[in-house]
Structure formats: structure tokens, C-alpha cells
Length: 117
Image (tube, helix red, strand yellow):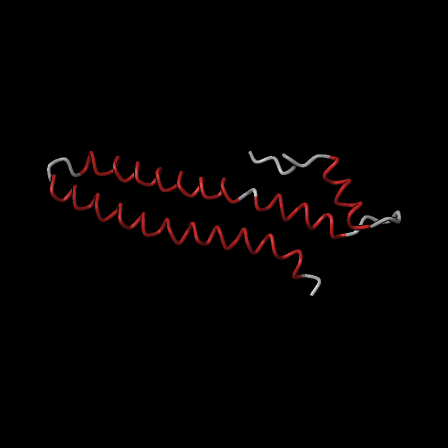
């Protein structure tokens, strides 16, 4: 549901093109303004992506609780221990996932500038 053009006005696009072309008019739109605008829009994906990872974590925790309620009703100590183990396992997976999301967004926002090199 992320709108790729949110907070991106025609004035922003016009200004970026004018800044790239300088005082003379250009026949073709240069790549630089497009890259600058896309880079800014890609960085906006970070927060929704991290929020999505947290939603997945929460949903997996809910699923694990629902599974244990019915099957382990007679074994409260086992249920508690399994809840701890599953919770720790999912928490340990959340941090590397968030780090990977940061890296992916960073790589995607930098790929436009590294293609010219």
C-alpha cells in the first residue's frame, strides 16, 4: 500500500531536472534527476519493511501460542519452556531480518549510482 509517488510533486521533478541540466534546455531528460528522486523514494520503504517484519514476528508468536494452548494443556512446565524457546528463536531471527532489510534498502538506493562507475 506504499504509494511510490507520495511526497513527490511535479515541482520536485521539475526542479531536479532543471538542476541537472543547468541553464540550458535539454532535449532529453538526464538520468541524474531520476536517480536522485528514486533514491529518495526507495529510502521511504525502510519503515514499512521493518514494520512488516515485526508484524510477521507477532503473527508467528500468536500461531505458536495457539498451537500450544490445545496440545500442551496438561503439561504446564513443558508449555512454558516451549514458549520461551520459540519466543527466543523468533526474537533471534528478527534482529538479523531487520539488519538484512536495512542492507537491502541501502543497496537498492545505491545501485543507481554504482552503475555509472
